Amino acid sequence: MLAGVVIALVATVAGIASTGVSLKYFLQPTGALIVLGGTLGVTIITTPHTSLFYAARRVSQLFRNSVFDREALIEEIVSYSRVARSKGLFAIEPLIEQASNKFLADALLLAMDVKQRSELQSALEDKVRLRERQGEGDARILEVAGGFAPTIGVVGTVVGLIDVFRQFSTPSSVVNGVGTAFVSTIYGLVLANVVLLPAAQRIRARVAEAFETQELMMEGVLCVFDGIHPSVMRQRLHCFLRETEEPHDA
Image (cartoon, rainbow, N blue to C red):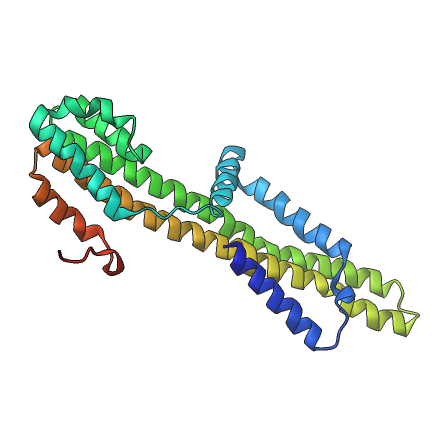
């Protein structure tokens, strides 16, 4: 994500430089203050503080690598199945502390607490759907902020034009001032289309990837609960692998 933002900003700056216009012309502290402060303020107005906190934490997580080795995850779940089939479901309890994923650990603990498969499946499905809704809510917050940023930029432009018209008696100042005023609009467009809206889509992509992984774990835990043979379980769970992840035949 960081590389993408850098590439977009560098390309924008390079495009501006190719026009022959000095980059100093686009460094307008007033416009930046209006756009950044205004967008943040409007976002705080439209979003409860707890939701804003979770959205900020979600954005910070975008800079971390969250790719799971699904094939290794399948083998881990199969290992639980072997233990459960030979020694009973409660025999996996000491192993749960070493689980590679918190969702998997919670699902296995839940499997030992319930008596009916339907109850376990319903609880896991609710948990997966809740996490998906939370991710969608975080993405929507950034989308709302991205929708306001260009408008706040226009407000900055209007403020700049008002300042220009105060100096209407000096034509050269008016010409330079008009161009400077529109820099606020550029700030708003860049903030929305290079940072906020792409980050929202990135969150959705992460949520979709996590949803698939959680579905894999949910299906695996249900297989462990049902006492499915490890070989049959492995074949079921391999359906969650993408083509590039499919293991080669021995």
